[in-house]
Amino acid sequence: MRLRKILTHFFILMALTTNISFIMSPNPYELVITISMNLFATILKMGEGRILSNELMASSLVADLHLIPAGFIYFLGDKNEAVGLAIGALAANIISIVLGIIETVLATFVEED
Amino acid sequence: MRLKRKKLKLKRRERLIDIYEERLFKILFLFRLPLLMLHSVMTIGTLGYMILSDGDFINSLYMTVITVGTIGYGEVVKGSDTLIGRVFTTFLALGGIGVFTTSVTILIKIFFQENFVGTFIAWKMLKDIEKLRGHYIIAGFNRTSIELINLLRKRRISFVVVDNRKDVEKQMKELGIRYYILEETYKRAVLDAAGIYRAKGMVVNLGDDTRNIAVIVTARLMRPNKEDFFIFSFASTTETAQKLEDLGANKAIVPHRLLATRLAAYIFHTSSAYISDLFDRIAFGEETDIDIREVPIPEDSPLVGKKLKDIDLRRSLNVTVIAIRKPDGKLNVTITGDTEIEAGDTLILFGSPKNLRKSEKFLLKQLEVKA
Image (cartoon, rainbow over all chains, first blue to last red; front, side, top):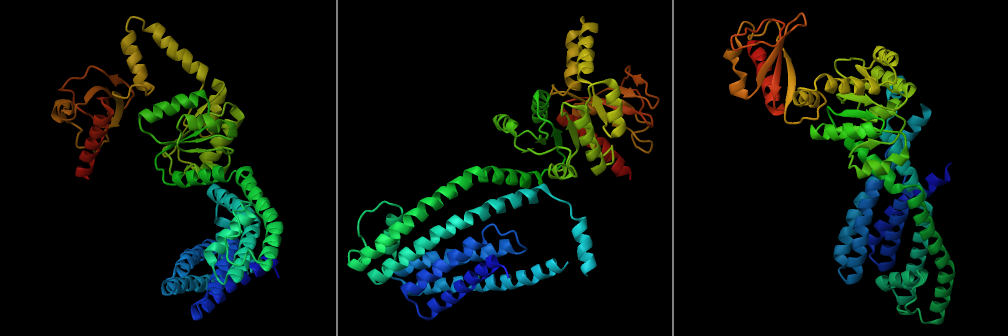
């Protein structure tokens, strides 16, 4: 068990789950927590020299770039547009999760070798 | 499957660009902790003020920034002027200001101490070097290299300078050298990064015979064919020059001998100093408007048996055949339009570099047409 890996995967999952909960019931607290979790996940992916790190980082940045504008748009009044952007971020977060699983499987093979 | 993967792993060369990329990742990794600290404080502060103000995000974020950033413009968020609000601000300021200043200090320290920008520039340069083709590698940066660089620039020949001294970087930048690598020259990974497999040749000028040998041997092991990849080196004595040539250099030059030969040429031709100087400048590549080129005529060339006036290079391409070198090495300088081209001859052409290139292509085309 590696604490760093647990922490990274925890925040990647949290980013996804909070993103879904914001889409299901849009409210300001959910949105701020989603943005925050996504930023945590991005920071934790920084400087990782693993197999799919670049792809993971890119997907995380995509999610951030959807959610940060969503935050401003939401608080400026356009809730529908903010939800739309959050759905975009959700797609990026799902990709992030899939990449995370692939990366873990590949890393296991490399370690075995 | 596993065996195959293992073999692939072993075959993979260590690349300098990967080492630099790893360095960049390591620096980025160091940024994580201060950023996480800063982000945690910002999240706690924003969410806290949002609860107090009933969901006012933008003002809550602003209030957090001005609190932890010690700006303190006042209580701008609704609910922050209440008792609970002031208790929250007190705790946020107590914890947040320390975290903020520590994080910012660490971030700045990492940025400058780990030379993030320098590593990124070096990595970018290696990426650009990967695009170079037919360039020259100059191993060793000194006054001779600077002169050589100026001459190569005149001929628009691209080059990569490799030197292990970090203190020469400033001078290289001042001279506007686009591609350089500050690493040990004799390493395979460094020569690979300098594009040895795509380069035309290399100049080894490290100021020390032992170091020159190390680089020449490594380079020749990587590019064994002397016809494909030219290595020119400096040597301290004639004996060492011979050894360097045996070890793989196409030509090893003894600087003081070369200087003496050039000076002697001036002494011997005092009455025809201009021509002597002109040939010298052409030979040394200082004359960019005029050049001399040798074009060998193979036995199956359609030009064999033709007279010089028949191909008339002077009129069609503004190039003059000044001499013909015979297969036995003798030079025929008394040529006329009626001189016949024989198999194995080498035409010595005189003209502008552009026209010389055209004539070379023209003569080569003749052969291709026949084929």
